Image (cartoon, rainbow, N blue to C red; front, side, top):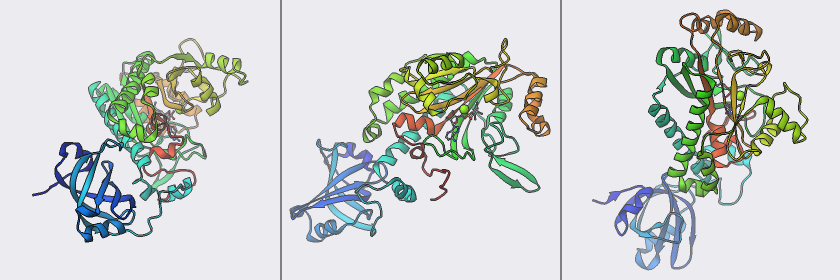
Amino acid sequence: MLETISIIDAPAHVNETVKIGVWLTDKRSSGKIAFLQLRDGTAFFQGVVLKNEVSETVFNTAKRLRQETSFWVTGEIHEDSRSKFGYEIQVAEIEIIGESEDYPITPKDHGVDFLMDHRHLWLRSSRPHAVLTIRNEVIRATYEFFNQEGFTKIDAPILTGSAPEGTTDLFHTEYFDHDAYLSQSGQLYEEAGAMAFGKVFSFGPTFRAEKSKTRRHLIEFWMIEPEMAFMYQEESLAVQEKYVAFLIRNVIDHCQSSLETLGRDPKVLEKYTKTPYPRISYDRAIEMLNEGGMNITWGTDFGSPEETYLADQFEQPVFILNYPKAIKAFYMKPHPTRDDVVICADLLAPEGYGEIIGGSERATDYNYLLEQIKKAGLDPAEYSWYLDLRKYGSVPHSGFGLGLERALTWITGEDHVREAIPFPRLLNRIYP
Ligand code: 4AD
Ligand code: MG
């Protein structure tokens, strides 16, 4: 019986006859030969149809194949040193499965809006395929990392009554007779998890109704949120840099071909596998920005020009520590000797990609936290479960959130965060 294989397994079948289910991405033919560009989801390679070696029917079928027609191809695998993949199939038989006509995404250039309108089809193209292959590797490596570091995955709810990151960008919904919101962050639940399991993490979709139309903002994005009991900021930063370096290492080692498709140089990424990452205070960051002529006053949050300027001063990702209390979330640990800053850190990616991690030590004192909840305009009754964590054996603890798509946009070198998720939800887009 003829073996059915995937394109990716072709190297193990050189000079053997195999059968593969494929789609046609492109085609070139002359009187005597047809070159079929094929894909099957695992890889892209070429099929060669020689008129003198196949029946007239097969050659004619090959010549009239249209883009995205699906078919079974049978033939012998050969090495092909001229191609990127390194192997090709010499076609013997073609058996059409599904016809395709007027496929909208042709090999010519299309505008971004057109491609996004056809995202359900665009996923088949080599560039999105490469980005999403790397996304899969980052997710795989995330689970490997947190498992090997002794973390337990505690899933946070998506429908919640809490607003950890402020009330301005909540997605409101009805929950029978109650109000509910789509989760902005799983953090508060991870804090409960940390008090039960020590080291926990969540990985799930989060939602921000941000009216931001920038290349860094999604309305729906995925976040990895570790939370660790008995842990101070400095140890949390060590976990963060070890995690990010681990992700980069795994992408370099396991995604060579996708990086090559994207034109992302692994030598550039290699620099980011070295730890520790530099750390500077928010105070120092303000000084550096002013020295660089950015003219910014203490207390202001950083926008993308500031983050890019700061990141450009370093070769690796850089931690900015201890931001003003007034611009950070209510749950952050107050500084032991200063009233105006909290114990927190953002990790800024190099090359202008901005903040990829936000994290902090958490406030441990019941009364302080209650006061902060009120100051933030939140209803303490909704947070009474969260306050309980400070009533029964409160301990120092820290955690952080890595935005998957932000990190991935940086790792892949893409210029917009919409490329880093299969079906982006943007300010003006909920289709497809
Ligand atoms: O800095 P943020 O808002 O922090 C939190 O949500 C904390 N509760 C995390 C924690 O400590 N457990 O968001 C964390 C990260 C950001 O650094 C960024 O990478 C990403 O989430 N992020 C977004 N990514 C895409 N689109 C958006 N609109 C994002 N907002 C935040
Ligand atoms: Mg943040």
